[in-house]
Length: 201
Image (cartoon, rainbow, N blue to C red; front, side, top):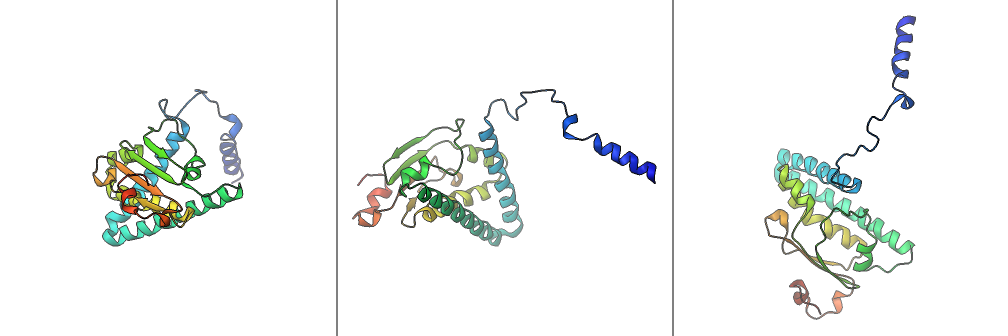
């Protein structure tokens, strides 16, 4: 028994951290992507695989569970972002929402058309890395649910008066994602429909 115990101890000691040797010092997960982009891919796929299996297994009921979970997650993110923004003495507006995002920047992400004003966000997104990954791995049911839920939940938690209009979404099969968003003084505008269609007040 004592001999077996010594052997086990010896085996464990062989796996101590200082015994490892890096044969490739500059090893990267993907030479063509930044570390941030790689983590974004993992974020995209862990949601996609789990949510898709829930929907596959439980149908419409499973989809509703995923939608509720995304709303909870979006509310959590938006609330935390709101608290951090106010902590630093910043105004809650669409410009600060994006300028001080709760996720790190990603130089590998395609920059698409955006028009920022203090309370306005106008964007036509024709390419999306998340969409491409979900499509590649046949996770489109989960993808549509994510795109329909997450922005509304996050941005309305950040500021309760936010309007989020997404007439087109890539994961629905549209040619682009359109965002026509407004916070916080849209109630004072007489013609909200013109803003939804992309016109400025």
